[in-house]
Length: 115
Image 1 (cartoon, helix red, strand yellow):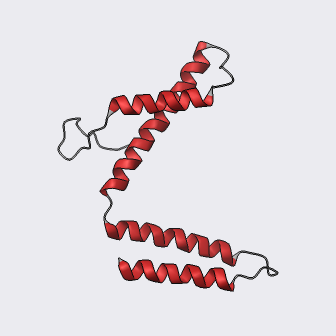
Image 2: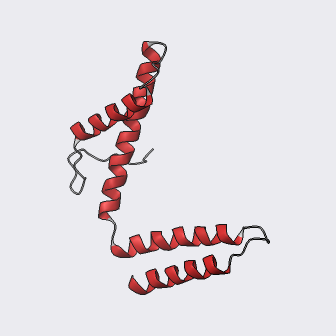
């Protein structure tokens, strides 16, 4: 939870399309329960609340991604590539990693050059 209260009319606050968020939540709910229904009304409400929470999280993530600068996106990509490099380094000794490692290091260098 946030420690501070943000007024709904505060400047700089992103505007959300609440109808699109609700329709996304219903789409998630229908997808989850296409072949089976929850046992009672309370289970259905709880399931829909999870879908609605997921829809809000997706909408907020999309806004955050849209507001990122080029440098922030490059930093995120370098972080992803560094994680992938650690996965390559953790492979068993019998597997060859030199080509994959070199490819990832080249990608990191390219991203850092372009940022």
